[in-house]
Length: 68
Image 1: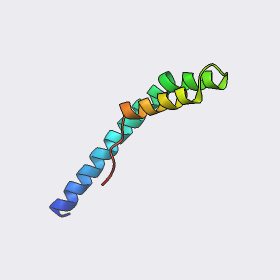
Image 2: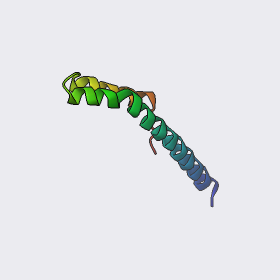
Image 3: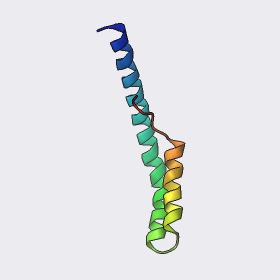
């Protein structure tokens, strides 16, 4: 494998690992931060926008890296 290909492979693996860690963090954050608001929205005790804002906040808090 050429040096360039090795660098690309290493970068791919690093991004994949990072994104996996972020996905796990997001799952926990959704459970504790946005899912309760979703249930409140379903019962008419919160707005859809409050729930969407909570989801967006989790995504901002735990962003994914993009493969370039």
